[in-house]
Length: 154
Image (cartoon, rainbow, N blue to C red; front, side, top):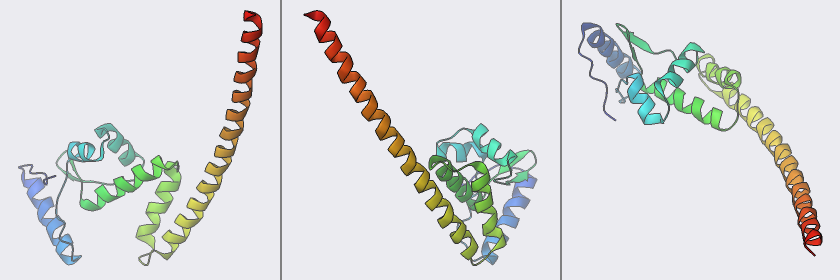
């Protein structure tokens, strides 16, 4: 999707600063996104994105009153949505994302991720076992109910 083109002096100044930062970082991705663009791209509502902003998970820049998101913000939102899809709490996701800024080597972040993933896998395996047990019990009840119906029809 194309970058946002909001005509205002604030947006122009913000875009110029963003371009300098991206150049200094050696990054070529220079798109800026509005909340509605990101919402469309990520398949969520603008309200969802603003909720994550309120929780401190993303911190967009502002051009006047308009929220302006960078590729970094977009990447963070993608990680947030993936984390939610995988069943992680917003607190766990925030802790993980905050480690990125603290540890440039990302060793701590990867260790925390590995521990969280292992914990989540164990929980999902427990849930699967409980579901399989429930399905087996329901299958037996279903079978008994069918037999009872057959007996009453004779």
